[in-house]
Image (cartoon, rainbow, N blue to C red; front, side, top):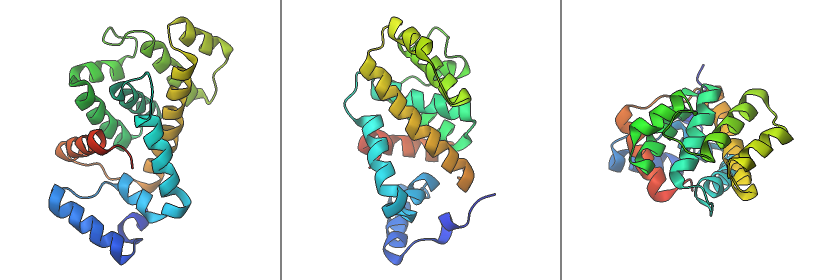
Length: 193
C-alpha cells in the first residue's frame, strides 16, 4: 500500500520545484527523489551524501559496475522500482543493456569478469542472509578484488539495501521505460545529490 505522504508532504517551495522538474523533463518526479525532499533533515540530506559517495565517489569500480551492483542487490531484494531504475542506469553507463540483463539473470554468466562476479555473489549472499564470513571475503580477494573495492561494494550494498526497503515500504510507483531512461540520464550526469 502506497503511503500518501509522498504525494502531499511538502512545503510550497518543494511543490514548486517538482512542478518545474515536471515541466522541463516532461516526466513526473520519481518517488525516490520525493522521499529525500520529504524529511531532508532526518533522512534526505544524509542519504543523498552517502549514496552519492558510494555510487560516484573515487573507486576502482566503474560507475557501471556500481550501478550493476545496485541493480543486483535490488533484484535479490525483489524491489521492482530499484531494479528498473538501476538496470536502466547500468545499461546506459555500460552502453550495453543485454550485458546487464544477462548478469541480472545469472551473475555467473560470461559477460562479467572477476573480480566483479565474485563481488556480486558476495553481495547477493549478504543481502539474502544478512551476513558474510571470512571465507566469503577470501573468495572475493582471491578473485582479484582489493580490500578497498570490497569496502566500496559494501557501501553500495548498504545504500541499496536501505533504499530498496524504503521503496517497498513507501510503495514507490513504477515509471514508464522512458521515465526510467530519463532518470538514468540524470543519475549519470548529476549523480545522487
